[in-house]
Amino acid sequence: MSIGDNGSARGSIGSGLVVENLHVAYGGVPAVRGISLEVKAGEAVGLIGPNGAGKSSTLLAIMGAIGRTGRVLVDGRDIAGLPPEKVVRTGVALVPEGRHVFAELTVADNLRLGAVGRRDRSGYAEALEQILTMFPILRDFGHRQAGLLSGGQQQQLAIGRALMSDPDILMLDEPSLGLSPTAVDTVFEALDLIRGAGKAVLVVEQRAEFTIAFCDRTFVLHDGEITLTLKPEDAEKVDVLTKAYFG
Amino acid sequence: MMSQLIQSIVDALSAGATLGLAALAIGLVFGVIRLANFAQAEIITGSAYCLIFTWDLGWYVAIPLSILVAIAMSLLMEFAVFSRMRTANPATLLIASFGLSFLIQRVYELMFSNNVRTAPVASGLAQTVEFAGVRVQLLSIATIVIAGALLLGLQLFLTRTSQGLQLKAAAADFKTARLVGIPAGRVIGLSFALSGILSAAVAFVLTVQTGAVGPSFGVQITILALVGAVIGGIDKISGSLAGGFLVGFATSMLATWLPQEMSNFKDAFVFVLVIGVLLFRPSGLLIKGRGVART
Image 1 (cartoon, chains in turn purple, cyan):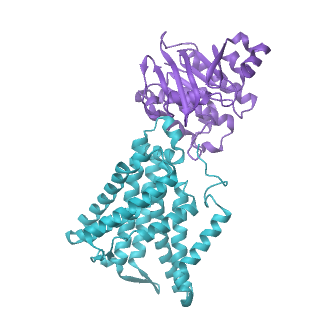
Image 2: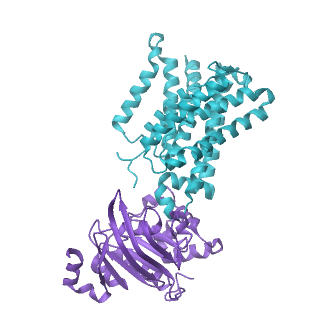
Image 3: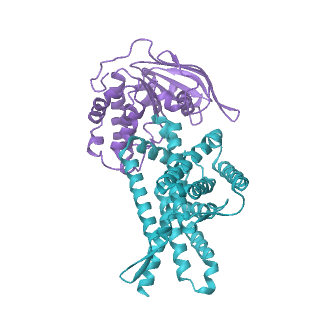
C-alpha cells in the first residue's frame, strides 16, 4: 500500500475493525457500556461526545492498554488478551491524546521507534519516504529534539510515528487538541490522504461539527453508550449537534 | 595545600563516579517500571561475594563471573518478584524491594555467616602513585576510567542501537512506548540486565576498596545512590547519574575538608544539601517543572 497515492485503496470489503459489545470499567465504575461499531478499510469513523463519555477509554480498550470485555476483531481476527505492543503487530496504531512524542529524542528517532511494531521490516525505507513526503516538516527537522517542535508539528510526528508501523487501522485521540486552525487543517488533510489510501481511520474528537463533516459516520457517546449516529450532512444541523451533546 | 586539593578532587571524582553508577542502575529500572529497587544493594553484595570467593581463580574468571552473578540476580528479582507486581504503585514496589533486600541479607547470613569474608581483590590498585607531587591512589583513577568506559558504552548503546533507543523511549514514557509497539518484557529485562552490569562495576570498586564483604555490604551505597537519584531526578536517566555523582563527590570532599571535630557529621551535611536541593527543585535537579506526573 502506498500512503501517498491518494485514492488507491488496498483494503478489501470486510477488512478493518469490528468492536462488539465493548465494556470498560474503572474500579467497578463503568466507563464504556456495550459499544459496538465497525470501521471498514478506506473509511473514517468519528467518536464524539462530552468529557467522560468513554471516547478515550474505547480507544485504549481496543489497544489492550486497559481491561475490557467484549470482542475486538482486526481484519476478522479476535485480538482478545493481546497487550498493546502485540495489538500494534496486528495492524492497529493509536495516536494518543496529547501526542506523547518522545520529547528528548530526535524526530528521526521517534519515527524509527514507530517502525518497531512493523509486521514487514522490508518496507521501512519506503514507508519513511512516504511519511516524510506527507509531512515535509519532519524531513526538515529530522535531527531536532521532538520536544522542541510546535504542537502542530508534534501532532504530525505522532501521526507519522504511528504510520511507521504500517497499520491497517489508525486511531487518533483528539488530534486537534491545542492546535491552531492551520495546524488542524494540515492534520485532517493528512487523515484524508490516509483514508484515501485504504486505511480504516477511527478518530475521537471534541470538535463535533468538524468531525461529523470529515467522517463517513460519527457516533455520539454519552455515559459510555452510543446514543446517536450521524452522517456528514448532519454537520450543519444545529439541532442535531445540540442533541448530540446535550441529549 | 594545592596538591592536597588536587588529590581530594581526584578522590571525590572517584567517589562520585562510583555513586553515579549505583544511582544510574537504580534510575534505569525506575524509568521503565517505576521501581526504586532497594534490593540492588543485595545484587552489589552478591557480586562482591563472588569476587571474594573466586579471586583465587584469576581476575579473568572472577570479574566475568561477578558480572554474570549480578545480571542473573537482577533478572531473577524481576522474574520472581517484580514481574508479578506490574500494576502496583511505586510506593508498594519500593516496600517490596525493602522486603526482598532484608530477605536476601538473611540468606547471605545463613550461607556465609555474619562475619566478613576477605580476599586481596585487585590489591595492586590499592597502591598510590605520584604525579607532579600529587599522590593519587590507582583505584581512584581506575574507578574514573571504569565509570567513563561504562558511561560511554551505555551512551553508545542507548543512542546507536535499536534496542537502546527502545529502552530510552520506555524509560521516558513507558505507556506510550508500549502503544508504539515496543515490547514491554524485553525492555524491562534489558533495564534489569544493564542495572546488573552497573551494580557489578560498583561491587568491584567497593570490594577493591575494602577487601572485605559482609551480608549488608551494598546497603550503605544503595541508600546514598537512592538519595542521589532522587535529587538528580530519578525520572530521568541522566538525572539519576548526575545526582549520584553529586552526592558521592560532596561526601568525599566533606570527608577531606571538614575539621576533625566535625567529620562525624559529614553525612548530616550531605543530607542538608539534599534537603536544600529538594526544597528548591522537588522533582530533581535535571527535571524541568515541579511535577513528575506520568500519564
